[in-house]
Length: 280
Ligand code: GLU
Image (cartoon, rainbow, N blue to C red; front, top):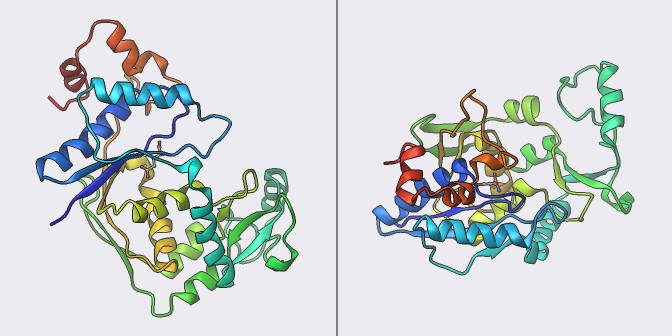
């Protein structure tokens, strides 16, 4: 069996213990079976992504003893690829432009609408057509049409992690009820939403196993749906548990105190870090 996995940090802060844990799990799974481990910088947040974080992440991963098998992929250099995928959804008639602000959406949701579940986009722009698209509009997936486009609906993905392992069927009703008309095209930089870019890159990089934290599990059904709409087969998924701080909160980029570079400056060795995250 071929095995290709990746670590896909967003370079918006220093690498902390949680990232080291995630990267190690993916890296060591690949090395254990003679597979490949790739690195991808998800740097489409042009304001928050910083070159110094990219350099620091490379330095930290190298110090931790990890190696990757290809030159890293930078999403900021591939916006045309994501735009092509977005164009495929648009030309398939599966999208509509949306000019709603968060405020508009909150206001509409506070006035109950028959038939639209409360946590979903309240469909204000749903009747607009793409020919009416204006600068600054986001692009939403027309979920009903997307579900229809798949005809006989038999979408599944395989989860091999230790937490939720099994085969997951994605059904139309859940997508309509829980997901709704998600934004697939961003208004800020006019490219695909980040979960779409990430799914497209998993295909582009030939990823067979997506290894990542369980906090991203909820995106999986949407990513699998988008991949199918774009004519691709979904990879396998392995969502691992998260490293939490001492009050049980997930570590965030702003938890600089847990930054790998800080531990390193304090005299910790890579083995000490492996021990700290419970992998040694
Ligand atoms: N860029 C995401 C993050 O840093 C990871 C996305 C993924 O692994 O699919 O949380």
